[in-house]
Structure formats: structure tokens, C-alpha cells
Length: 241
Length: 178
Image (cartoon, rainbow over all chains, first blue to last red; front, side):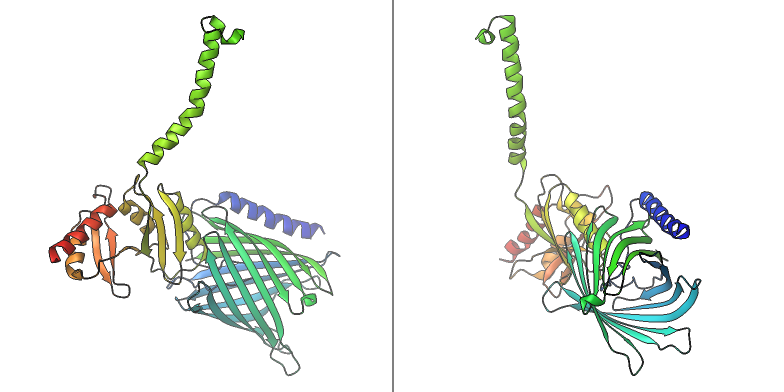
């Protein structure tokens, strides 16, 4: 328990320090939410280094952590995001778990409306040779309001095996600015049916440094399903080069 | 009733206090009335913002920064049309100052003021006239909208440009044509 407290404490301390260090910064192009995606594409000719830590903490103290380092690059229409998954559970130390590649395509505005759409596909190849690869397709709807960004994601996931079935999920996220560089928001990600899992994550999203090249996002949430409840912590850093 | 006796010391103090309170009450109203008399009618000006960025930071930055600019009443950004509409009163700042503010934002990179050309006017002459207004950097035609796209010089010593100057430049061509 002491170790868990230490990790959570350290993450929160780093987060708060970065929040306090946040200064005036230019806007940057990257990912706006922690769990959800938008149609925003990386600045052409720019590479982003992504790093995220997602932790689940069960009531009995069981903790599982996934660390996802990756790169993001592309142009006005396409975004490519190769990344790795490193896992750590109660029984296993942090280890390399899978390699994944995500490709996202910006569709543009839907008809004459201000709603925009994007579509993405991700394939994940596990380290273990006996395990199956899986895929995730995502349809994103996004709208920008003067004081809010709204995103809706429809997701279909499936393991590439004969007996597997499709997993459907839906996400809704809203964020609003609290200063020129910081935003707060809430993200809800639900599986279908809802009893299979629902996560609510209020988050804080900001840019750091004078150039705004670094993005920092943190969210502390709650996961509920028929099988288990858990506290969740999501931290994501984005560095633009 | 003692307090209302005008020529006693206490009476004078009471009158002064009353006058002071009245002045405090009336001054803000006068100020407001004064402000109202100097305020010109706000107009909505359109800017094209060709940036393909759709991230939250860029759009929030535009709204927050432009709204803080003195004289701005309202902003409306259409990501679909790549257009920013700003309802702006030029009483405090010229139009070119607003345009240069927008051009310095991430989303406003390569932005230009969209200026209507009256029907029937010689487009080339109108653009040339707009380009000759001191402080105007470029005046081009947007082939899609048939509006003039105007950018302004941003150096400190450059002359500022008002909407009236642009209007006069175009009207001058229209009158000459007729």
C-alpha cells in the first residue's frame, strides 16, 4: 500500500508542480483529451513524443499500470501513431506487452454543419506468440464552441480470432478553457451494454513552457462494471519537436 | 430637523455629505453617459483564417484573446468556413490593429480581413485602390467569395487603417466608374 501511495503521491506532486510551472504559451497541435480522440491532426513536419500512464486501483489495493510511449506525426489529413504498451500488474513487474500502430484520417465537416468527423484504426500485436492480435476502429465527431470542445467517439474493438466478438463502446468528452493555456473537462467512456463497464474521468489539460511545446494532462476517475469497481489515474505528456 | 439647519456647522457638514453622496451616485452615471456618446456603432468584420488547425487550444485562444481586445463585442468562429467574424467598435482602436492582433495568433496565421466589393465595380481598380491605402500591406481577390482579402503592415511606425479609409477607397473607384 505504501508503494501505491508513493506512486500516486509522486504523480500528483509532479502534476501539481507542472501546473504551477505553467506559463504563458502559444497554442499547440496535439491530442486534446485523455481517453477520447478528436479530428485534430499533428502539425505537418512535426513529430510529437507521447507518453501516457494509465493506472487502475481496485478497492482491495490491487494495482495495474500501463505505460504507453509513442510517436505522433502526419499532415493535415492523416496522423500516424506507432506506440508500445508496457504493463505492470500485482503479479508481474513492468514488462513489454504489445506493439501497436494507429492511423487516423480527418474526414472534415459533416455537410454544412460545424460538426467534424474523423476515423481511426489501430492494430495491436502482442508480445506473447500464443496471444491474438486485436484491432480497434473509432469514429470521432467533434464540435468546437466558443467556450467548449465536445467530442463523441464510437468504438468497435475485436480480437483477431474466430471465436471473438465485437466490443462496442461510446465516449463523450467536454472541455472548457480556464485560462489561455489550461482547460478542464470530463470524459465518459462506456461499453455496450453499460453494465460491462463505464468510466468517468474529470481531467485537467494544460500546455507547459513558453513555447507551449509540452502538453500535460491528468485525470483521476472512477471505473464501474458488474464485475469490479476501480479508481483510475491517467497522465499524459506530449512533447512537440 | 436640527440637521437641516443650513447655516449651523452641523448643517453645512450635512449638506456637504449629502452633496458628496449625490456626486458619488451621479458620477458613474455621467461616466456611462459620456462613454455612450463616444461609442461608435459596432460593425461585424470577417477574417479568413486558413489554418487547418481544429485543436481546442487554437480556437479557445482566438476567442479569449480577441474578446479581451478593447472594442470587441462578439466573436464567432466557423471552422467549416475557416472564417472568424468579429463585432467590433473602432472608437478605441483602428481596424488594422484588430487584424494584426488576429494575425499574430496561431490560428490567425496568414489570416486576412475580408472586405466586400460593391457590385459592378472594377475589381482590379478596387484592389489597387485598397492596396494604396497607407498601412495596407496586400489587397487580393478571394476567387471563391469575390471578397477582397486585405492584410496590414504590422510595424510600430506603420500608419493604422480604419474601416472608413477602406470604404472610401472602394467608393472612390465606384464613383469614378460611374
